[in-house]
Image (cartoon, rainbow, N blue to C red; front, side):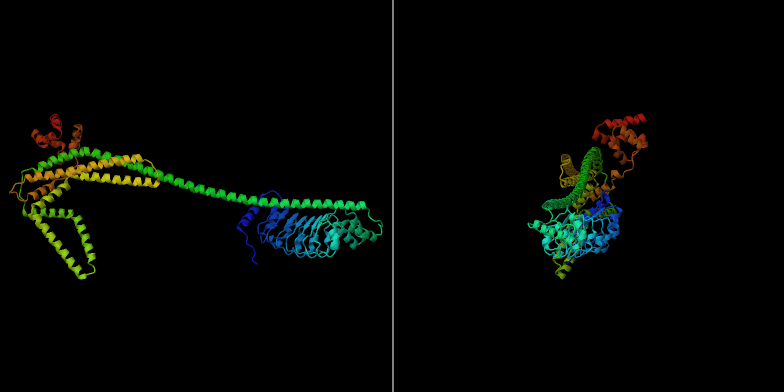
Length: 623
């Protein structure tokens, strides 16, 4: 048979009871109902240190009492409850419990009692019911102060004669099925009959003890009790020389009345024990419920902590989302403001550049190109066109790769196809060079592409379109984060920003298309100026575009010139002064004709005569 393993609940209950034993100020040390197979080591010494006088070990699986330490540590206890265990015998040194008054060893496997148990001189209560006892120690009469003795449900066949010396015994229980001495008939009459019989057997010296024994109790009653009791009294009286008279009926009635009272007291005692056990079970259930409540409280605290962490995380994510949306909104507003601010001055500068470029390309000064210069310009055109055609070349290469993959199963066909592609490339390269040299339409196309690349307005519009598209992408990411967070934060603001950016993007695309139309129109105007006998016309125009210096590469403007233009509220003309490298010292030496030639036409075309007269007025004053 395998011993029962201690459950987790019993282990926790043991820990709790050990804690209570240390902390409670009373004299109780309770380790009951903990499924113990052995008493924890050091328990008895702890009982001594804590000055405990009541030790409860019932309802366990204990087999040895001395497993908890030396019994000498328990010499001060007055109550020991080891009921409902698996004890087969009690230790011989149980006599060390010198102060013991109550011993409950019921519901065990005891077959004998050690003779040393009679040394417990202070013992008042002894319960050894529901065991396997067949006899009691012969000197059991030494327990002279015992008042309650419970022997029921034991296969006892003999009671010791010295039992009659127990002067204070008031309650006695035993099973009469196996009893032989005294006979079962006598035992059924009750404690008084048993004590009288044993006194008679022991001799004359015990008669006085029996006669004076009035406060007795029995656990059993019988209809023949009074008659048998009279017979026993007659026998006792005949054996005693000092008493030859028959006991009176009043004494018999008195004894019967006392027996009934003792039976009633015994029943009340049993009810008290049952109520105490019920209370003990209720306390155990209450403790278990308290443990469950503690576990529920801990679980609730853990869940609350997790919910709090989730809420904090969501608050942080929401804060980050609001920050990102606000940043996207601010960036969108800054982009719109920046583009609108730049466009105001950039358009003026671009208009000035258009006037200068128109004047440059309308110039009648024409010089034929040398052979080396012509080759150099053609090489530049070829490079520019090859860069432009890269996208188409990549697309064609992908198509060729697909064809090669489809022909990979036929090695000979693949080699032939590769050779054919290389031959076609060489032919196309030769044809492109030849077309550049002979066809003016190709040269014209190269000039148009270079003109678009060099045009500042086209570059500005392309840059602004990219900025707006990037900002729209940021707004899309912010909206996606908002959808993932399932929140409506700043939705109206995001919609307004997107609407403004889309409107600005549409405007920039329209301006880009208009600019491309203007460049095509300018190209047609330049072509109309070409004379029939002019050779390499487009090569010369191409070279002029290459020689033009963009505004961003001009030298740093003169600070005095910048101050003058600022006072005249004409800072938008600063790039024009940079292009012509006009400094403050040059302005002081310029004549009226120089001013007219350099600025009058441009200023009048763009802004009227005010700024031009301002420059003249400034020059006259400075001179």
